[in-house]
Length: 222
Ligand code: TYD
Image 1 (spheres, protein in one colour):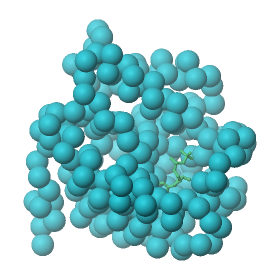
Image 2 (image 1 turned 60 degrees about the vertical axis):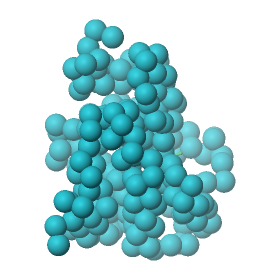
Image 3 (image 1 turned 120 degrees about the vertical axis):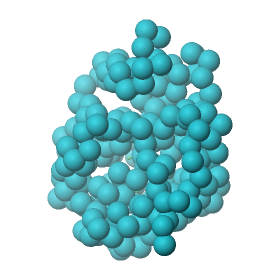
């Protein structure tokens, strides 16, 4: 079966994802980037994972609440990709097909890091599912917000929301997933940019904008 050919072709949209561990400040940077792109008159869809479509948001509630052992890493992976399939079908692909920019807070690299590097699911299994579900709808640019694990967890703890199932998995887990993100960025250097997230909001936002402008020539000089 050639799963890739089942995916509709993309039509001129741009797909940017933000990745990183807990407390890296992704959400703030997503909002700032989206505002800058919209100010240029571009159509921008701001979205997130797990979630982003009504069906995927329902799965999100199951995934991010409860205690750390509620789901095994394999169950998590399959639920993450079930949510992702719905999000791609309902939101991301239609947006890219009409030429919109999509900015997503977490995407498939979070599955590689959290369920793969952190949770121990075999990379080959993840790539098989990814090929079937994401296929050619890979991000054009992945911005990895990297910072020391303990500082990130402290920031996330201060935030103190109910969606803390992954935060409660312990330091070793979070060290493994940080290493997983960085290894992935090294493997696919043409699409990945690593940002030092252990600095203020303003300098990070400036760096994000520089990286986005250099990745997309149509934004240069904007
Ligand atoms: P998110 O709300 O982005 O958390 P944060 O506030 O830390 O940015 O994501 C919820 C949690 O889901 C987060 O702990 C990471 C986890 N996650 C995975 O484990 N696998 C995945 O594929 C995705 C998208 C998220």
